[in-house]
Length: 251
Image 1 (tube, rainbow, N blue to C red):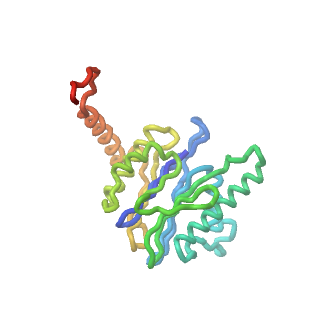
Image 2: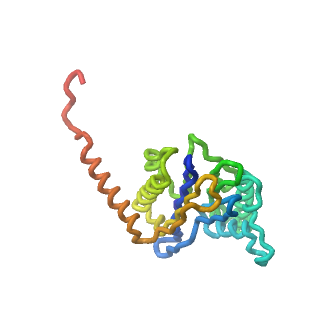
Image 3: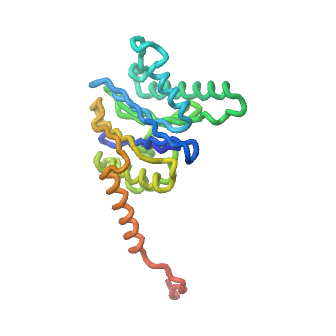
């Protein structure tokens, strides 16, 4: 399992993913699930993946044409004229890869190679965009009413973002909100864990504004986790007390 989140702001895009991959409690590994490419002054594109690791790695390899000699490779996301076409290319590759895996493994492997992908970025002359790509290859785009997408273990971190998100928030506040969302998910599900990968893409700045890996023991993340826990406990204590006594008549 994994957790990835892409958020659309007025200032640009904020992306975060975990790196934990596990096949049972005794087989836990770390793999990068966020990939990005840029042509300075022209475009920046990022991809986050969740699901079967072999499937998602195959999609990234096909995008980068790793089956060819280095001098012959052409990354297709750096050549597509629009982010919509980037999403279409990634969706097609994902669908084809899943179908290939299913065909190779027959009925016993059916449904074991599924994956989903978030594609985000900006091409010069157009707005930043975020797409959520489903295993079938179809996709939807983030809009003002749905300004963020999550894949993987989404349920624990979603309420935090729903309550805290504002489209005009600063990048710093957006990162802090993401940190709380990931901390809540990590606390609730052992299949999500550090290190975390963070990427901030500023509108009309076609290189990452900020990129960081948040390692186990990171002082800021540790402070966010402990402070958030203390704040929740204080908020809980401040809530009105429940009473078993019936309310007075007329109330």
